[in-house]
Length: 383
Image 1 (cartoon, rainbow, N blue to C red):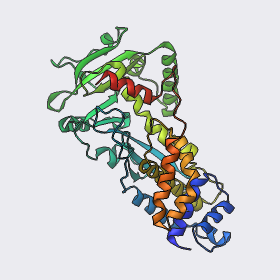
Image 2 (cartoon, helix red, strand yellow):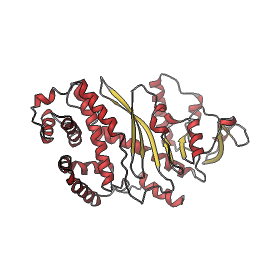
Image 3 (cartoon, rainbow, N blue to C red):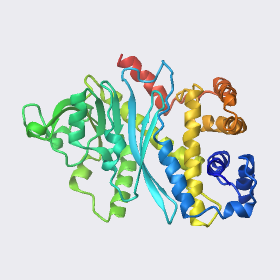
Image 4 (cartoon, rainbow, N blue to C red):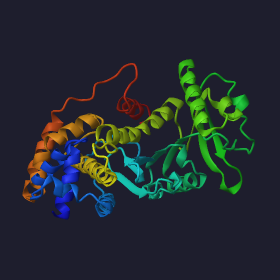
């Protein structure tokens, strides 16, 4: 048994089969070059193995791999960054991952945190961004100091409005939401978030929700209030019929702001890929140490898969992430051989690139267009 063999067993085995049996894990260990029995492999799952796999994940997260493509989605920005956190809980142990996903060239940045850590403290959200980049985040990252710094650095940002945040007109008069919401058409206006010297200049974009969308939102808000054991506030109920965004991007329409906000959902799809299709939280074993080791291994495998696709020229808006993952799984034997004979890596990437080039493209949708379809409309309208 070797450390590299143990890691390859969990990383490649987990990538190949999200809910592998003990026999399948053992076969993967044999393929990694280890002469070990199934019982011998079972005995390696202990606390030190969990620490080892966690350290391996943290080491992997320091590697920055991105596509070299020149034609990118939303080229108006010098990078489109989406940040969010996700919980990985295996029962007795767990972590929270703060993840920043760059959509133009696919780069992933992440930090490992304790489950109880507040999302605002995730180090990735405050990593420097280039002037002209766009950052999209949910309300868990709503912070005026951060918006002020980004605006000062020439970084664009867009966020949903956080209920209770004070907004003022450029002349200092407070925005009257009650009066503003009497209109039944989209509203766009310059505002200042907060008051005094620390106020942040921004644009407010708001539009009323269709009736069916309002019913869904109210259901969701009431369910969240039930979970929080708190009644809906008067402000929440008053603003529920409206979708409100704040941004420092000039010359946007509400529809364009809405398209950019929908782009933030791509990181949720990434988390879904990890959990639902990569089976990061699933295991056939009841052994807590084994569950944790398998979870770390699967996550590292998915990250390695992501790197491989970027190197092979994957274009996210053309080939869906799940289809791309299935392609990587097809060529895992080539990757396994390349890990022991490095001169075979070109063969692995060439095969992967060929498969991606001839993969079935994403189907277009008319009723509810995909985000990548909306990106093309945004590029044309905001050129």
